[in-house]
Length: 225
Image 1 (cartoon, rainbow, N blue to C red):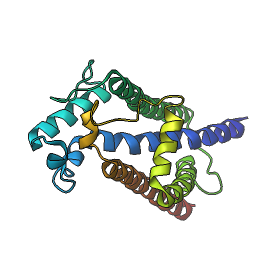
Image 2 (image 1 turned 180 degrees about the horizontal axis):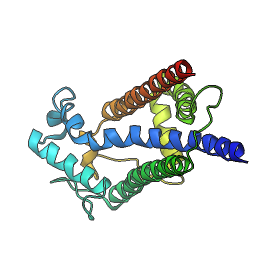
Image 3 (image 1 turned 180 degrees about the vertical axis):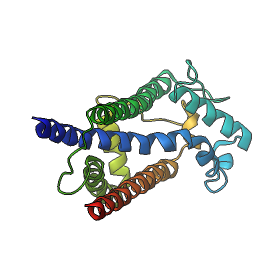
Image 4 (image 1 turned 60 degrees about the horizontal axis):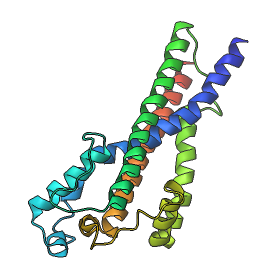
């Protein structure tokens, strides 16, 4: 009975580890998005594209991010006007961003509870195929990452459309027009592509760290035996 329970808990750590790592890999870039965006202003010539100064662009993007991260209740984009559809889309984005952080903390809480429960029983989680649940969670994420990377590399614009179709089903308010929502002038497709790269690299670094930690832990336990 004890072994069966330890086995079940070990299996449960796989999806919750994957969710915690994936949501964390998205959440970290989101929290660093303002300085990351600032690096794009000069290379992408956003001032000439939008007719705004660098400080006005930063203020507009800061307002958008503060709203999407739940730091302010009303949507604004600095001095830039926006349409009801534009504000509605950012409300949808806000829900996704906040959902990501909720998934992260919930997944982390489940993993902590499993660890605390096992420690209270003086149990050690079973190794599945010689590895921890976190290892297999990373393997699953890397496999998914490989598939998505191939699709994005083949046609980023198509992948961009598919992404919005999946996360904003039945909606077209994500199609922005400069005349009604000039905020799109400071967030060109290249910026979103670089955001995707930022998230992908963060995911790779976290997965690599977890896999290396798992291998070293396994070797240490093997020596102790």
